[in-house]
View 1: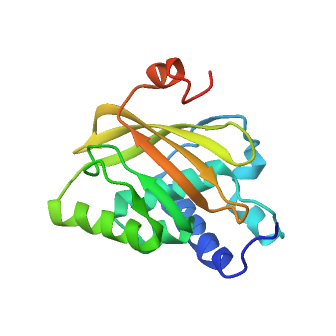
View 2: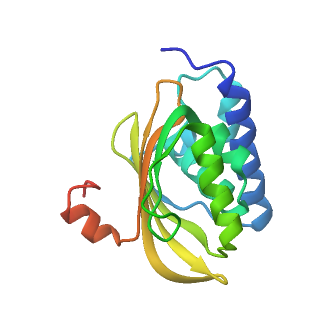
Length: 179
């Protein structure tokens, strides 16, 4: 199925912004299983592509989350997204659609939650499913492992995602993240 032409410019903008901030911070490229390094290059978006890499989308999602940028998250999400944040970042609620993402992030802003996330690894399971192995940071220091398991739509945007406060070994034992 072709990429949604209205979603692509916003998605491209969000991905380029995440790459630019990563370059400015001097961060090194994280370890990545199952994704070719070329696929993570934002520059490759200038060529018509069926999909954007899971790694690029994962980094852009975490970047938008850390900035509390609702529109950045919306640019990466399918209009029918179902988002299940961890209990740390939500109240056990499932957030639906772009308005749900905005409402969730507004709740974080109101709560003055100061934590952020850092990507440790992105694992692609297949063309549409991936996991982000990460950690929660408070004042720049890791406080707990975390992860997000997500599925991409045919348009290459996140349509379903669930976050966990767990280490990757437990997620592997539960079958949520393949070894």
